[in-house]
Length: 410
Image (cartoon, rainbow, N blue to C red; front, side, top):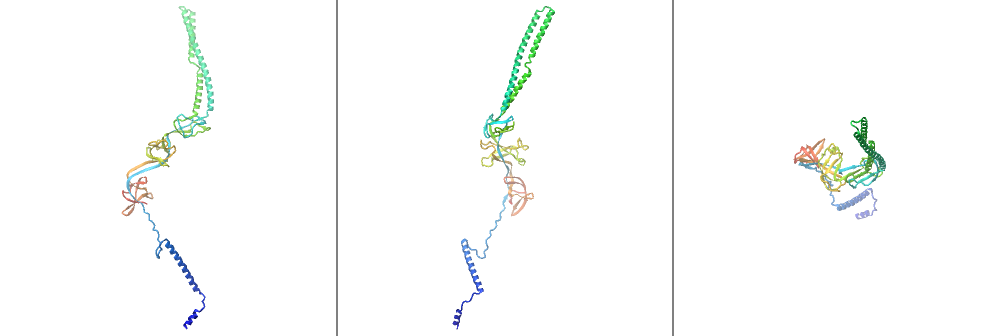
């Protein structure tokens, strides 16, 4: 019976799937997909490193706590220096210009050439002056001719007057010799007349002794002066080098007007160079003539030279212009620098030895106070300090710190 019953059960036709069975199937499929994903993750973990075990926390980087700098109060030297910039310039220069007004006719040089004293650099147009010179020379020739003619006539007249005096004297002497003793009235009359004639001859000589009419002499002098002035003007129409050196500035061009005494060229003696700089009043207050300094090129590496502040502008020093003048202790080699090269010079303003100091970065400020943080046996304490000279990254401690103290930086 039992066997027969089982056969009947096995022989039943298949029953349709219920909703609960479908949910079970979906869950099984999801579990299979999840298992596949887990296997893939394990493979990736095996590729890049050991797998993270269950319950192990994800590592988080520990933040680095910055350490504050620690300083020691030391004793030593503090040097306060200032660096400035200037340009190479010749010490000896001379500006030149034409001595008369005119128009440039021709130029013979260009800026940058070497010249010798007396070299003609440019020439003004002198055509008008040359015409004036011809007219003045004609006037001088006429005045001279008139004067010479009058002078010759005066010489003749003077000679004639001398001869007339001699004749009058001879006649008087003869009359005196022929007169009776005592002289008769006729003799006395004759002698008196001859004496008068002699005196008149002497007067003629005295009149001629003054020479030619002064007006004629003045006319000659005036004409000569006019000729000389025009010749001087023609000579001044040439612009000549006042000294030997290099022409560092040259402005005239043919056809341009020129004004008397306006500087249009500069000649420099390049054997003696200096550095010039224009500074503010604030900078000038820290400087003094005679301060030592070091000099080097502003942009390119090169030799370092020593020098001094030669002069400062008024009222800070004796310079006649508005520039600071820096002198080399020893002149650089020829052609080492060109006029206008940019240089820097570092001035030693003040230096103190055997003073307490800290780096400038160790000093803190708050509400106008300067203070430091001193560490003593693990305890940090704020201490007000009084500062002195500062330079080269160091600051002098006048009060508030002792040598060897440990200071915590900001």
